[in-house]
Length: 161
Image (cartoon, rainbow, N blue to C red):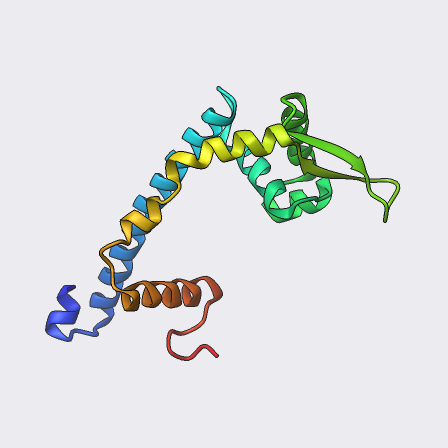
């Protein structure tokens, strides 16, 4: 329980302190996620950079995607996305095929080797969230889910439809 919860303090200073504490926890979570991405990238292909791993996972999630759509989805410029795609192609992790709806572009998809390597890279984390939340009540898990959704969408908790 936070100091504000104990004292009922809703002052601007208490709110600022609570937001700083939340920001600190997000920083720790982001660092942990970055470490997992780096480890997974290295398991897919030793020396693979996290950006290439993120590109591979994004293509896998989309099933098939153009370089332009990939760049837009990843919030990078098209030339940066093209470089990462080329690296993944050279490793045999993704392949291109003609886009039937636009002859000028091609569709990217993960190869069977890419799917296999991605699954092997993710294996150590499988069930990690389940283990972490094993002692949590369903009410707490639902609350966290609801609050993260509200934070991600800019909604006010309890007011979203």
